[in-house]
Image 1: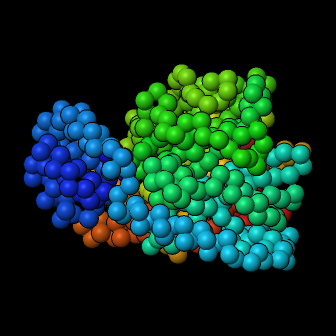
Image 2: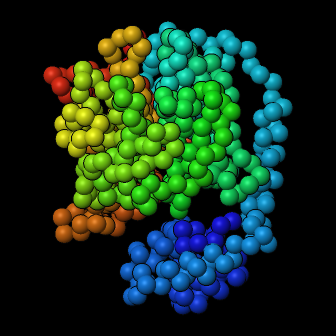
Image 3: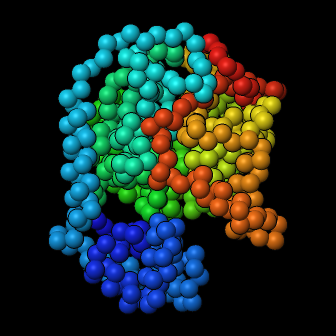
Length: 454
C-alpha cells in the first residue's frame, strides 16, 4: 500500500493511522465518504476537488505529506493486500496445473463481434491491444483479462501475446509481460489498472520499448524494454508522468524516415497532447502540439489510434464514457508534429451511435499491401448500446460539466451508473471488432461486415 492523496478513500479507511490523518485535515468528510459507495471509489484528491471543499486545494499538500509519512515497512502490505496475494498465487498455481489443449481450431475469415478463439479453441485475451509485424509474423498483444470476472479484484493478468501469419488464426505465445503477484506496489500487480500496451522498436538502441498506461489513481505510465520482441522485458520506469501530466489513453508512433518517436495521450482529460520521445523512446521530453483542446467528458477524446496512409497522418479517437462505447471521431494532419483537424465519425451507417458497440485501440497496415485494419474491443458484449442509450450517456455525463446545456433526470442517472461500474465488468468475455479501413477521398471509413477476408 502506498499512502498519498492519489489513493482511494476505501483503502485509506482500512488503516487507522491514515483515517486519523484524514480526519485531522478534513473533519467530517469521513462520515460522508463512508455513507456513499461512489465517494469511497474516489481518490482523496478527487474527493476534495469534487466536493469543492473551502480551502480544500490549500490543504492537499499538507495532507499528502502526512499520508506519505505512513509509508513505512509496517504499512507496506495491508491485510487486504495480503489476502489478495494469497488468492492470486493460488490462482496462478491452478493455471500452471492445467493441461495444455491441442491446437485444433481453425478459421478462414474475421468475424467482427463474434467470440474470437485461438488455435487451441480458447478466447483470445489481448484487449486494448495492438499488432507488431516482424519477420513474416504478426504479433497481437494486449491486456490479459482471463481472470477479470468482476468478482476476483483482477483488472489485468499481465500482458499476453499471440502470433499469426494470416491474421485469422492466432497461436497463444504466453505472457509478454507477466503479472507481479507478490508486490501490491508493482504496476503489474493484478489489481492495478493496466491498460493499452504499445510497443515501438527503437532504431538507435535496437530495444523493443513497451509503454503501458495505469489508469485510476496512478494516472501514469509504466515503461519496459527488451532485446527481443517476445522478451523478457525489464522495468525502465514504474510511474512516469510526462511533463507532470496525468496520463490517459495513448498511442506511440515513429516517423518511418527519421525514426523520431512521438507520444500522443489524453493529458489531464484536457487535450490530446503530442510529445516528442527521447532517442531511446523511454521518456517524452517536450510538448509538440495539442489537438481537441478545451473539451469536457464525454466529449474529451481518448483511445487514440494513429496511422499513416498515402502521406497523411490520421488519428481515430473515442469519447469518454468508461467501458460503455460511444461515437468515434477521425482526424488528420500533414505531419506527426501537427495539430489534427476533425473529419467526423468514421463509422458508416451505425445505428448504435457507438462505433458499432466497440472502442478502437489500434490501426495497423497489412504488410505488403495498401490496406489497414482498425482493431477494437467490445468491452461489455452483454450490454448493447443503441441510439437511446448513447444519447442518455451523453446527456448524463455532460450535465455534470455543463448543466445549462445538458439535462438528465434522476432515473436516467441511475440507469447510467448501474450500467457503467468498471470494477464489476466481466471483461473476461469481452470481444473484438476488427474492420478494414476504407477511404472516401481522404476520409477514413469503417463499414460493418458480418465476416470478411484480406
